[in-house]
Amino acid sequence: MNFSITRKLSALIAVAALVSLVAMSLQLYALHETIWKDRKALIVSQVDSAISMLAGFQARVESGELTVQQAQDRAREAAMPIRFGEGDYLFMMSADGMRVMHPDPKLQGTDAFTSKDPTGRFYNREMVENAHKGGGFTPYYRARLKGSDDLSQKLSYAQLFAPWDWTVAAGLYVDDIQTQFMNEVYKTLLWSGLLLAVLIACAVPLARSISRPINQMTAAMRRLAAGDQSVEIPAQGRNDEIGQMAGAVHVFKEQAVARLRLEKEAEASRVSEAEAKQRQADLEHAKAEDLREFMGVVDASFDRLSSGDLTVRMSGQVAQEFEPIKAKFNASVEELEAAIGRVVGTVGTIRVGLNEITVASNDLAHRTEQQAASLEETVAALGQVSSAINQTADGASEARKSAESARQKATRGGEIVAQAVTAMSEIESSSQQISQIIGVIDEIAFQTNLLALNAGVEAARAGEAGKGFAVVAQEVRALAQRSAEAAKEIKGLITTSSDQVGRGVDLVTASGKSLDEIVAEVAGMAEVIAQIAESAREQATSLREVSGAADQMDKVTQQNAAMVEQSTAAAQTLSVETDGLAQTIARFKTAQTRDGASPARGSQPSAGRSSARPVPQMRTAGSGGAARKPAASEESWAEF
Image 1 (cartoon, rainbow, N blue to C red):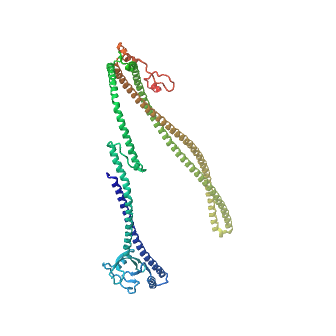
Image 2 (image 1 turned 135 degrees about the vertical axis):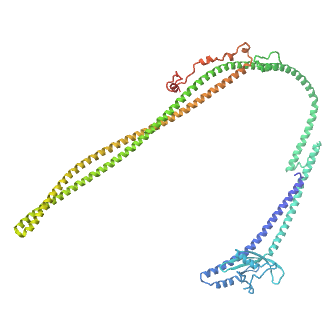
Image 3 (image 1 turned 180 degrees about the vertical axis):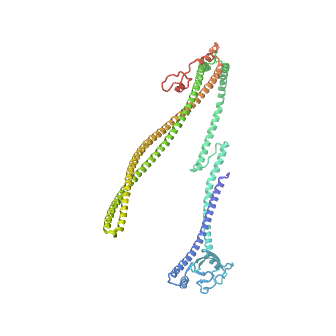
């Protein structure tokens, strides 16, 4: 902002006044809102109190103490004398707009929905609607005095008492709010005007006390810049920032006076400086001639050096100050010539070594490939052996399962034999019981025979009367004899069966013992087969580890072969680079090359001599001796 300090200070004062006005406006707005909130809170509190009172009467109705009509009558009597504000009151309406409670007895029981204000608003109807919506405010206009045309704004709040469906409302005149607010506005404007006048009265002298010294100092600086050294700097005695600025301007004035004095002294010394410059010019001309001659010698020497002639030396007389340069140049060229000579010899040695490295690398690559092939065959063989051992382990497992099944079947057979022995023992016991029964039958037949004999004797004694009885006795005797014979035959058969059953028991017992021995042998065989299967699995695991190790060795060998090929390629590349280096060095001319010697070509070995050198063999890990036959695959494995 390219304004003067006076205008900037005036703008600052104006901004301060504007901020004050804005703050005053915000304060007045907050005051207006506070007055309205207080009035609304007063109305709401009266209505809430009335609702609480009605709720108390409703509680007495619910407890059975009062009827609804009694409670409503008492509520009217209690709310009728309530006043607040400047004679303001409560009133209540039903849902159909009937005034159920009003301080004016004339309005009690009348229709409130027909009332409207001069603007045509049916305010009582709006109150009931707002009450049924949860409560709300209704503004309207009414005359404070009956019969007066002077209308005032009134604000009412209505809330519903749901148990009786009554709308409880109260109102206040709010036209005095604007009057109260305007009084506060006038007071605020008055005080703000006074404060603004005081602010301007204080700010104008302050601005002048700042801008006037600055303007005076600006005029003094302009005179000082124009060359007026007699100007007086104003405001030097002040202790504020303006006094500091005056002090700085005073220092600037003193420096300007001093600079003018120095310029006069410099003008006086220019004459003597011109004579000194003439003498210096003559001296510099002489030095330029010496430098031109020395540069000619340097130019010729560097021409020969750039062409590769390392025998060049600076000769002839030069100025005294250039003698160190001449000596250092000659010494540097001598050292460079010696270094190039050593490089030539070293290049020859490197070429011989590279040829030997190439031959050895080729041989090592060949033997490494053979070893890799052998390792691949070994890995394949180990894989086949591992597969065979796995098959053996699987077969042993199957055999162990078969032996276990045979052992279980033999055990089952032993159990069946034991059951057969038990059954035969029971048969033998039954045969013995049958023999006893046959003995009883034989005894009965014997007694029957005796009885029949006695009956025959008695019948013979009876004579003719006992003949029939004698015949019967004879038949009974014959039957008894046949029964005895049959019992004897049965007893013989049972005895024979018992003997055969005994022999069968012995045979079955022997079979059971044989089966027990077979079970024991089969169990032992199963254990042996299990051990064989476990050993086969362990061997398979070991062979897998060996196969893995061999596979790893095969990979390492392949990597070694690749590294050997890389080494061979690197050696060949280095050989090519060495040849290029030798050709580069050959362009340099040294004392040796001037005499006709060629160390680079003389040190290069012939192909036959390189191939005739013994190739260093790789040592074995065990014996530490040199391998004799690198071509054989077995010995190549040992060398590796």
